[in-house]
Image (cartoon, rainbow, N blue to C red; front, side):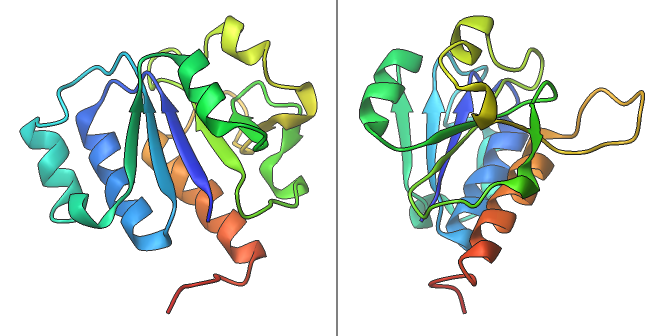
Amino acid sequence: MFHIALYHPVMAANTGNIIRLCANNGCTLHLIEPLGFDLEEKKLRRAGLDYHDLSNVYRYPDFTAFKTAMGERTIYAITTKGTQRYTEVQYQADDVLLFGSETSGLDPEVMAQIAPEQRLRVPMQPNNRSLNLSNTVAILSYHAWFQHDFAGGA
């Protein structure tokens, strides 16, 4: 299935929600440090409920280690500065959806490693800054899964 990567997430509740989401849609979650919270934090546990044991979650000390681990997989950066809509892509089952920090997005050094055509955006009303991270992960991951007829789902 798909891979969800969170680059420097800072809000435990968002990451907890995403852990629960990944348990339900079969995505593997990758956390790229530094994290803005402890993985044992109560807010993270509460948001993820009892789904931690049903999810595959991996940690990386930095983007280089993460990118090395991903090998030849296609990495799509989800950003408000994306050059195309997320709906214009035909996702492959092993693709990676990379999301930036809730407060600062993806660093320019990371963005420079992602081809412009792999920088995707979610349409919004004018004058809005961004969507909530866990909502955006849900939108993208379910759209990609939909393209594969919800393979493996009930």
